[in-house]
Length: 194
Image (tube, rainbow, N blue to C red):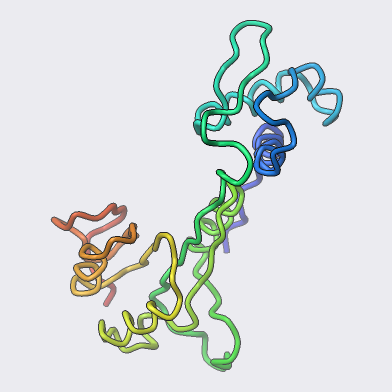
């Protein structure tokens, strides 16, 4: 199993500052680089990199040379709610794992989960995989309706399943699977597993 990627100090600082923005701690203006560096016990270079990251995400507006950064309009307290993202796994449970326990995600799904959680999203895995639901789109969609999400990631979905997702109002990202030609975001080879 591949080790999980480690977050840089700038990414850790950005995650900390993002949480403080969510709490509304600073109102509309973020403290300066010197103050944040001293408070967080990191270098000013690290603070600047973290603030640039938050600017890139649209959470902060640059204040200009030697000026405080402003919280971006509409991004104050409560506006930074993370998304609830469901990851629909393909593979079945390892042999001997009881159905009462959660699925063990594939390594790529774990990496995606950790990356999304690091920026404030909530990630969950439905109780059953596509294989456990016999690739039956009716069963899968009934199962998914019991676990609503703001967005879905489908790993190795069939063409029929991805067509269903393409017709929904909830955004979906296909990782592998038969998504070619569908109006859906996708990455990976365009084929179903054998």
